Length: 351
Image (cartoon, rainbow, N blue to C red; front, side, top):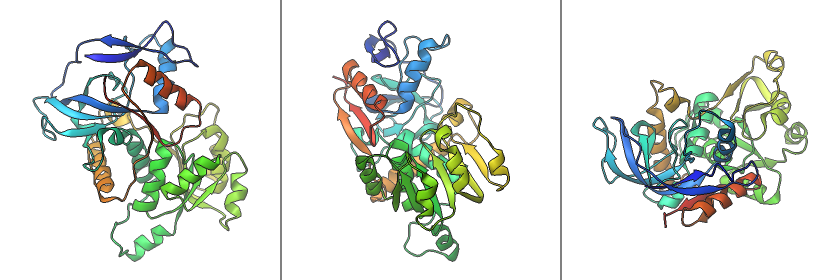
């Protein structure tokens, strides 16, 4: 099996390097699928783990990164019930297992979805990690109700549609999906943040009602819209920098969710006086800890596929490298490390 591992000798925090290695397909468990990988996408997690594993004594060697893939099921474990050999799938994998920078990957069926029929493998590879993170953040951590996609809304759903969410960092992969889900599935008034003309335009394309600049005073910009508070805040960009503004803007009894680890202590007392809350979204918890509801990721990925095929949600791919090789992986990591990437970067096909 061909795969691409972090090069221990050449790698650094700023300049990524990968090397081609040959190895055996990892052993399969009773609920595992062995997937022939057709395409992968790169996430900020890939670049962070590349650097963190550099100093970790417990990191797997060789280290095969990658947490987004699409492909074809080639074999199944003895207790697999959700898929058959030949099924086209997409998934984000597990943080504790070898990743998707490989021709074959073994993954638990409960965190795998059926690939959207209307998309190619390369377009599907961009969706899983960001869709899971955005979906769990919105509908599970922030407890926002999903609204019927039909045109007729109940009075309760109309009330929900009046509510507003601030999505900080709307032009990245998770932000791109969060904007769409918040607008199309939750029917919220969506304020996204972006800092460049290109990223502002992207947020608008994804469906944001308003776009503000998170490098400027966000409180003043929201208040200029005539809003004192927002009902929900989803932080996807620098929790430390945006925590104070988020606490100022969140409505009494509202919730803030973040996916970005903080570096300094957060002052929770400002939330106490509002009876407001702060929650984390970490999408690998279900697979890492084998939670009883692990299969929910299978269900939500299938629902995202359905919404893609209906035309409700848009694909978020913005750049494709081909084939999957050491040099293209290096370039994709450099793209993400520039902090100017919009949407998702995909690699497709093994040469």
